[in-house]
Amino acid sequence: MRSSLSHPQVDAASFGRALLDPQSATPDGLTGPDGQTAPKRFNVYRNNVIVSLSEALGETFPGVKTLLGEDYFKALARAFVTAHPPLSPVLIWYGAEFADFLDAFPPLQAYPYLGDVARLEWAWLQAYHAADAAPLDPARLGEVSPQQLGDVCFTPHPAAHMVTSRWPVWAIARANRFEPDEAGAIDLAEPQSVLITRPDMDVNVFLLRAGGAALTMDLLQGQTLADAAGRAQEEDGSFSLSDCLSDCLAAGAFSGLLLND
Image 1 (cartoon, rainbow, N blue to C red):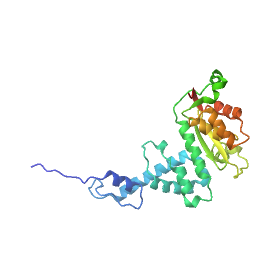
Image 2 (cartoon, one colour):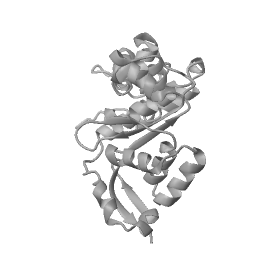
Image 3 (cartoon, one colour):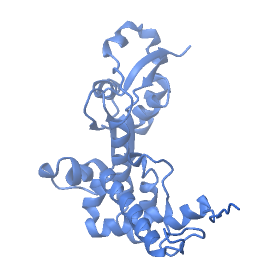
Image 4 (cartoon, rainbow, N blue to C red):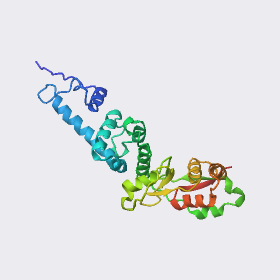
């Protein structure tokens, strides 16, 4: 007579929840080679997963890690990991919610710029891994008649991203990640907006001038040149269309243009 042994099944959802919650018990049905519940084995595995995800955050947000210090960042990362399980098996895409988490984390309310630094670092990562595309040749604008220039819409380059901040986000990020040896005094009362692009192999970060943030944001969202320039002028009286548009073109923010009929 043939006998069969039935093994208890582990519910995947319960396993996932317990995996990132240090207070959870070993999931029902999870056993070791001897068929007995294996809490020690599970705790080791759980700790390894949390550590791996925390280290991935440190790789993605090295500027935030420098600002907070390694020990504090480790504790903060564990808190984030337990609250935000990964949605993808690809670790380089883990951390999309980290900036909002920093904004809402009560112990960090005295450092309100941290969320925007994280947004800049996340945008840098998106630009780094974006699809390749040739940037728009500025000469293409010369092919448009003056009467139609206001109707021009631009196609955003796949690597183009913007971060607008009430804080000197680029100065802080430069000092703590990109150019620490060239850091100078930082005025926390100075708002900054940046354009992140990768027209070729390297990711570039450009500090936008007065009115440049409004113009660039609208153009990246598909607004016509006339509408975007009008809003930028309303926002800042010192706005220069030629200067700000030249900045966008030089940075490689666009990959094409079309006329809005």
